[in-house]
Amino acid sequence: MILEPIVPTVLSVRRLPGADPALIAAYGGDPARHSALGLVTCDQDDALYVALDEATKHAAVDVIFARSFYAGSAHASGRLSGEILGVLAAAEPQAVEHGLAALLGCLAHDACFYDADGKRTVTVFPHVIASLGEYLSRESGLLPGTAMAYLVAPPIEATIGLDAALKAADVRAVRVVPPPTETNFACAWLTGSLDACEAAALAYAAAVVDVALTPRR
Amino acid sequence: MSRTRQLMAALREALGAADPLPPAPALPPVPPPPARVYSPRPERSAFAAEAARHTTALLGIGHVGTRYATDVVLQFQAELAVAHAAVGAELPDGWAEAQGFVGLTTRVTSHREFLLRPDLGRRLSDASLDAVRSRCTRGADVQLIVADGLSAVACAQTGKQLHDAVAAACRARGLSVGTPVAARFARVWLEDEIGQETGARVAMILLGERPGLGTGDGLSAYVVYEPRIGKTDGDRNMISNIHARGTPPDEAGARLAALAAAMIEQRISGVTLDLGRLGEVAGGRGYRAPQVRQRLVNA
Image (tube, rainbow over all chains, first blue to last red; front, side, top):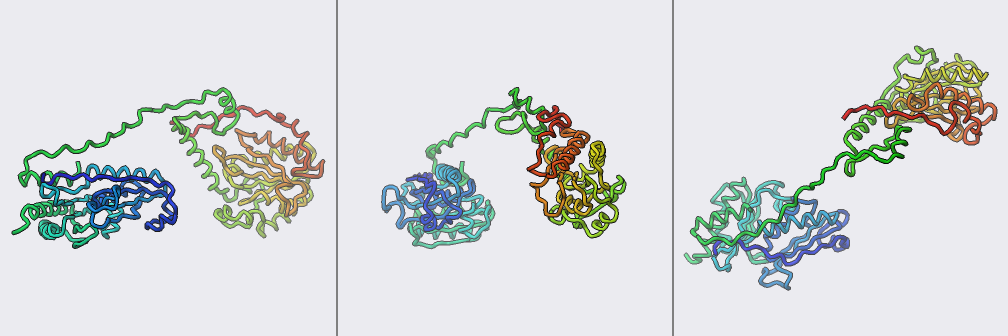
């Protein structure tokens, strides 16, 4: 079914209320400020990146670690690995708990890939973030609170889609990651007004669907 | 519903897909706000009510849930403001002379310096030292010093009254009283230098005490036998809370005179002074008249 949401599957959620400082430091945290961790694996990496950013808007948590796994969830190292491991860190377990609640809510109701060809052999992630949180604003170099279109698709679909998105609205490319990435998708972050970001995401999704349905033209 | 999902549903319709999407997962239930409303609960303990009658401390004030009632909080803040104002007050220029005292100053030059440098408030300025040497009688039994201390408000209100009460009570006991002096920006230990310079047998400083909640107008009296620079707090005896709701000035005057007489009789002061016979003076020990807390706020 074209453009049906593919709700991400949360494969594991674990808490470490008092993680070892060496572990926190190795995963990019600051042992002086962080002691409690929340760890999540999920079968959609980009949905979890957005959800981790959402968590920073709801609780005093930092995203200290978020990495995609090579070749994606179809080639995962284990039943619980999925496509990504994300780590939230905070000074106290209660903050991690609030952050995880926001993160899981975002995964269940907001951020997800969409079926682009009706057979789920091509998927697209045309997500609009109305207001950036602390994590993605740091990653993108934009100010917290700006709007951003987070666009992901397979290589050729992403290339055609990005061209369509940039031409569809008054948006600026913040970061373009051409293929191959860890998961062999291609990614683009565009910014502009919220309306412009929505128009760009729509154009991107429409172009990806078009390429998926008519790959030769 | 998420904005991105709305956009994609609209795009899906625009592309001609007619079959309905599967229903979105249900949103988690929103917990209702707490239904319990707290109303003020007055203190029901008879013991607390009785104890509260004998102190101005915040006893028997009840509670609202786990917190104070609003009127208690407002009263607390108002009393704190009274205390702040008392610390910030200064004795007016010429107050000492207007009351018939010899006016003295310490080595402090400003009110801020007075609060930050207790050591300067314990020694006389050079001009005041000359004034003490030239204008004060020497060798009196009791040298009285009125001072602002940490509450000029208290000093200006009842300092003169307390001084007169103490002086009269001392004379009634046959003790001679030195020339009355009043010091500005003074700390307790200033009595050591003034007493040493006047050669008094007992020095007694009556000064505004560090304000607490509801007591911006309290005076304290510190008494020392054979005052010399270098005497410690272990050599002193004192009476605090001299104000209308604590020990009234007239009653305090009788007690202080008895204290000074005991020092001269025993030739000692401080922790080794035998206070056993002082209880007979002015109401005896162990009894305190019921007190009424002054309401500053009506909530």
